[in-house]
Amino acid sequence: MRSLIACLGLACLFAVSPLSAQVIEYETVEVGADRVDSGGERSLFTVPVFESAAPFTPPAIPEGAAAYGPFRILDDGRAALVDVTDGRSPALFAAMLRDHPGIATIEMVDCPGTEDDLANLRLGRMIRERGIAMHVPAGGSVRSGGVELFLAGAHRYVDAGAEFAVHSWQDDTGLEPGDYSVNAPENRRYLDYYRQMGMSPIEAEAFYGMTNSVPFSSARWFGAAEMSLWVPLENAG
Image (tube, rainbow, N blue to C red; front, side):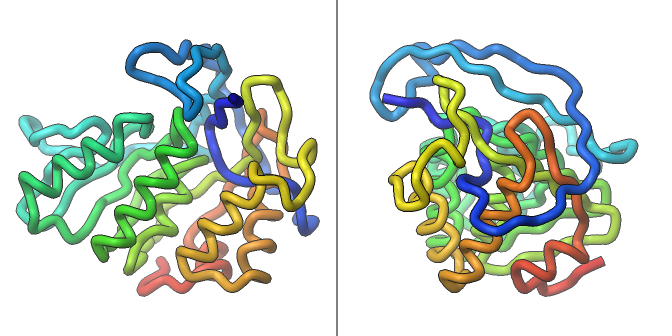
């Protein structure tokens, strides 16, 4: 069973010119007891670590806020997402809402991506099912699999100075989206997800093609104005 990693995208269905990219380093991660792929196998893969396109000063997170994996409680109605998601994130998200049922908005402060694509898609569906809004504040950075979580917002807000980055995925054998047929399950899961998040079939294909306009080892950076061309924003700075 292949372990899909460090998300966004699949076969480049529409040609889109990539923006500038910046790659800092690679981190090798072993999938073990607490990081298990969908087949339960152990695997070794490489996750690209992307720096922000511009000097990045994330909004401050209050000290002592309760933590649920990558989530931090800000107040009765808000949580922040401040780290990568992994296979444990859906359960931690459910625990957070159990303990703090008033959470209605997630502040996407520093969202590098995911170590488990399938769990990340489950998490996105949970966010949508609960009707939670996603807000990227000024200085917020949403990259790779974090973009899929942003799309899950029942309401989406982006402030001026926020940034996004997308790239194609790569599995643990080194294959990327274009190595699979358009209708392969590896590609369909993303197109189906985008449609579930409100895109039409044509919009889903176009967005998916955009995310795959650069290879796994690179990134395409853009801001609120371009994101507003892909999905409705309730504000765009």
